[in-house]
Image 1 (tube, rainbow, N blue to C red):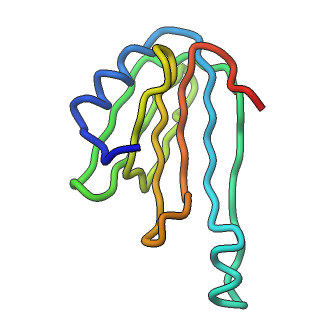
Image 2 (cartoon, rainbow, N blue to C red):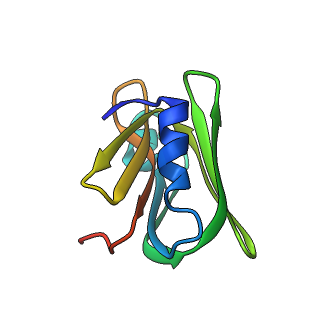
Length: 117
């Protein structure tokens, strides 16, 4: 993965507009939090292969941390804290955010085909 380049990522996001695509969205501080602070709450969310269609896609950020949003007919999907991106093949966009130690904190992935398990 490489640091997010807003214009390039925006172009890739727009390729998925008005198409049925599969989304993987994951957030976690998981065990990262509790081993540092025994009173910390472990939180996370995980969804894989949700089929969605969105009419708008946007990435915004300050050069260090980014937020990507997808506007659907009846709501939004967004991921915040993104820092890195890559393309897999022709049909998968992967966005991720990592903590200072390189551990995954958030991931948003879009694909025209279902993700493998």
